Length: 630
Image 1 (spheres, one colour):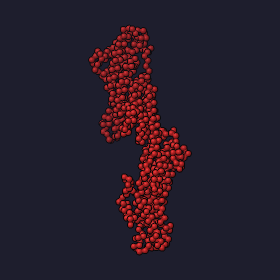
Image 2 (tube, helix red, strand yellow; image 1 turned 120 degrees about the vertical axis):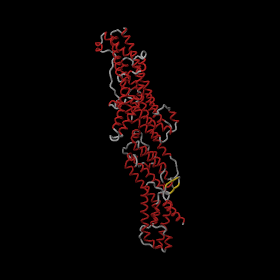
Image 3 (spheres, helix red, strand yellow; image 1 turned 90 degrees about the vertical axis):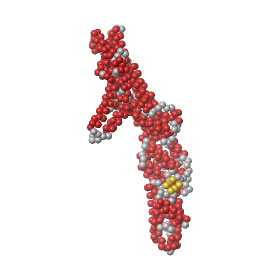
Image 4 (cartoon, one colour; image 1 turned 135 degrees about the vertical axis):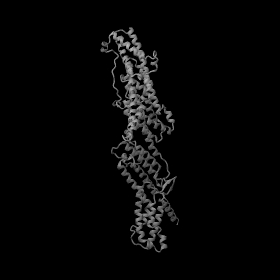
């Protein structure tokens, strides 16, 4: 078996065919005289009767092909000559003669012996002819040797490993040659049915046992529907491994063996392979259809369905090659039906996913205007989907585009609505993100403070963009999509900054270096202190998870507050009066303002409450609260 697996013939699963004619050739007619016929019958009788289990105790417990290969070859040669003689006697209308009767009795004894030998070879060489075992051991042995270079393994161990492989190949190759020799002889002698019956019984048991060991069992739709998802998920994982192993070893190996043993008859090898493999292969691919049709559809089912679709589609060429016979067309049809059902399941699950986003009814505001669970869940899902972009492209290529009427008209300026032709998978993914962003826009309106709604939108859109950049979504959506949405993030951040910190910006004079009276300076310091305390108290619990966005927002606020305040502070601090008056009106130094701003947006959400990320931040917050109480 292994020698075939590694020969050029394996790829096409073709074995050389031999023509066989039951009629005696003209050469055979000339070769036999009456005396020669008698001598041939006597010679055949000598070796055939020697191996008659009913008359010889030795023959009853000994294998001809195992004990004496040369004599086994002579045995089959004598049977073939005996068959020629019988055809000659029939053609000479001498079928009622004693010679013909003797030859016929000898042929029956010989066929009984060969049938027994055929059974013994199949049974005793079960491990060596088991396609799964041979392929597995072959792969393991070659892999273990390739792990070493010439210096890493002693020469004697390399030779020993090589000898083991050769020995294994020789055993399987010898067994296959013997089976073919017997099959050719029995088929030519008109005893194909007896040979085929033995082969089908033993080889089908091997295939059935292999399928069972791989964990493939016969299940009904109701049984699959009643399974908990965790149980079904384990069965799917097991199936994914079983599908690869069964195709690459079990069914492929059986096809090679069957083609070789019965190479003399196309109809026989097709019949044998069909009866041996059809039931197990149909059971294997039928499971995928059962999973696809299962009513329970947790969202994680999508990825198992895609895995199963990919497994069958990637192996389709091999399925067509192995099960090319018309008699096993049901296997190909089952595989195709499973692909169709799996693709329908994917489309249904995509629709369910979109519906899940639409129907999300949670009105709870995200603490700190941070990331919404819907954003994180949806992007996790879409990121995983992008890893299956090739499979999804195949599945949804003919799926109608999404209906724009399901979203507000204000969202139609998204890249998903462009008229330029784009791959169906890109359009679908862009649409699903658009649905998510529309839903987030609705959720942002639950914030009473409009500035927090803008920060919420900036945070969540930034998370979407980050996940796109870090995954295959980037290749589906493109750089233009990212650029457009990054501009939206900047717009949301600018709106947040304007609404949350606008009063602080406005409390400082346009020209901080301009001269003013002490009273005017006091009023300006008090106004700044009041507006800064109010803004900070509202924003100190906000969070910006993305480091880049956090730094950009803080840098923008700092430029407009700290730099201007520092100039004003240095210019007018001394004009507010004595030290006691200064402490009353000038409550923040530029360094204080900078420190407070630097600690913004680090809050992390935990169990619905906000907690600061460092002891320094906690200290500043406590100090600010003490100022607010003063």
